[in-house]
Amino acid sequence: MADLQALKRIFVEKFGEDDEAIRVFHAPGRVNLIGEHTDYNGGYVFPAALTFGTTMLVRKRQDGQLGFASTNFPEHKHISIQGIVFDKADDWINYPKGIIDQLQQQGIEIGGYDILYSGAIPNGSGLSSSASIEVVTAYALLTLEGQPTDKVKIALLSQRAENQFMGVNCGIMDQFAVAMGKQDHAILLMCDTLEYKHVPFDSGAYKLVIGNTNKKRGLVDSAYNERRSQCEQAVADLQGQFPQLTLLGQLTLEQFNEYQHSISDETVRRRAQHVVEEIHRVLESMKVLEKGDLEGFGQLMIGSHNSLRDLYEVTGLELDTMVEEALKVPGVLGSRMTGAGFGGCTVSLVHEDSVDNFIDQVGTNYKEKTGLTADFYVCTIGDGVKEITE
Ligand code: ADP
Ligand code: MG
Image (cartoon, rainbow, N blue to C red):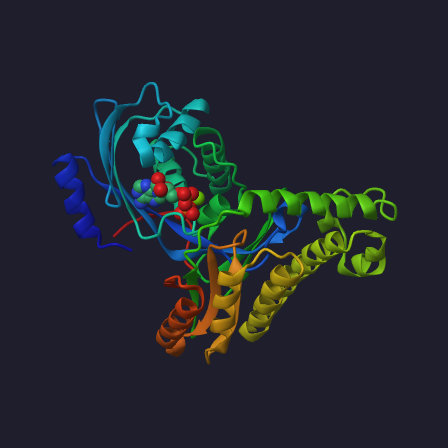
């Protein structure tokens, strides 16, 4: 996290001195460790909160104004707490405005505040800086207003703000992981029901290294819609055998293996195979991690990537190259794409003594093969949103 004293100095430079105390809150970024394209099929995802995220400094004002500043962006402005509306010209300030809009819709009165954000999460890289700024804002304002801070409700409120105010059609995983994260634990989460469990992920001498392919993602929307309808087609074909079936996630691996021949189209069958096996891999991950078996988890990561490459076909040259190069480095237990695919990030489990070598070797070979420069972030699993008291 950023140096708090330095941030407090920036806060005072922007908003001036005042007797009111400056309070400090923090929400992390997140990464999905395994369980890709399972959420809309009624299956589990397995995200974890990172140790770096968004720090928010906040101080009460008496005049009903809201002051917004960020060390990451130039916009800096005061607005009235009345009449919060989306304004494209406000750029990033729309994210906290969306949260205040949701709080007001719930009848929660928000007073005046000056707010400074400082983010350590690269924006738009798939580590969910948007969920982080949303969740930290909701948690901080509810705390300061003396309201209950139920973190699941905060995740849902933040998702609604992103859906309704920002117009971004995201699911619940990001906000949930950012709100509910726990140090050295992953979260087994069923997105439809919000059934969840913290699973120990004691990474010991291993680090999570996230590699950003920096590949522009053009294909995602159309390919995503096509995959979704292929999953629906698989369900329709399997309903001859399972009349009650509505989602692939309701099938066990054994049931799928026995009746997959009733899916007539081979491509559709392979899509369904990925989904059912990936859900199985998530559950296996929980089991091996509960035994502290990081090597076992690394193998499941590799299986997940291979399935996303060969059966679900959502990887592409950049993600495949990065994972292939990662697995050549000694001290790497596993590596896979994370997120929707076609670009974005990979996540690898790398021994701490190998991290420098990993970044050097994978970066060089990736550039040689794709012409793109990768970025790397070395992470461990941190806590969800909280107040920082010195
Ligand atoms: P991602 O969530 O993958 O990082 P998004 O495009 O969903 O990418 O969200 C990134 C946006 O969130 C930024 O462009 C900015 O508008 C807002 N944001 C995130 N962190 C901060 C921050 N520290 N200060 C100001 N705005 C931020
Ligand atoms: Mg986002």
